[in-house]
Length: 344
Ligand code: CP3
Image: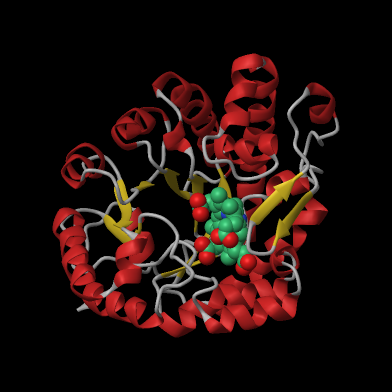
């Protein structure tokens, strides 16, 4: 990693302010691309795609070939971790993930203490293949889900609007929920270390549902576990570049930064940009925060919002991105226009 010359993305994560920011998009490999839909159809199931290095490497590279983003993100899913802990996982077409819920001590007792590394071997192999295929200037990002977000799926067995089942478990049985979070902390660190060993240049930890917790629960179930994961990863990879994405945490993000030693923080679209610049970008690199709906809309709105994002964050250490994943019905021409606007 250190022998290669660093491209814009890694320079921004090192705290450099650049005359033009690096850019990539969350969910940049996905259904808005016809070439993705073609490979996806060939793979059969979504999990088959994640666990087949040839195909996973191919879809990881597709948005790089088409758009020349400054970073590729490993094609996988945050739920492969509970899968590697032995929880049953499948994806229902057009709906999303389903897991056999783990919501009591008996079910938790059936979960492995440690991830089955054989199950994750294809993911590490995908990393090696993609890193070999990428140019030196393009970074490869690995990832996992944060314990709270992954636990919301483990407990409910699916996505839930209010995170009710996970909240009910931490209120009714905090010891059991705490044991589940600890299990995720240890294994997420192991998994990220495995990805770094295989050659990713940076990792992002997605806490998509951080915004569903009030302050005390946020500190206990998001901040504390995240601090521990980052410390464990840094014990093995002191130079690791780590991005935290406590989506929706808003004004609580400075508290997160007090404890979680990340190099950069992802910003959701709804955050107040003045606050984010003054209270967050003054401390770490920020990444974000164009609204995916604006990208889908295109036109005047897109021009205006890209200018606003650049005006707010362009002078400091910054990685251009969306505030959440690209929507499947986003026109490709809008992505092309976005790249022109950011790079001109
Ligand atoms: O960003 C990328 O291009 C890399 C790949 C990636 C996927 N999922 C592929 C995917 C990443 C980084 C994720 C993270 C992920 N997965 C998160 C955190 C980020 C976020 O979006 O909030 C979460 C919560 C999940 C769990 C998950 N996976 C859900 C809820 C769904 C269904 C919703 C949907 O968008 O379909 C998935 C499926 C999924 N993961 C798809 C992709 C490309 C769509 C599957 C398909 O092709 O049919």
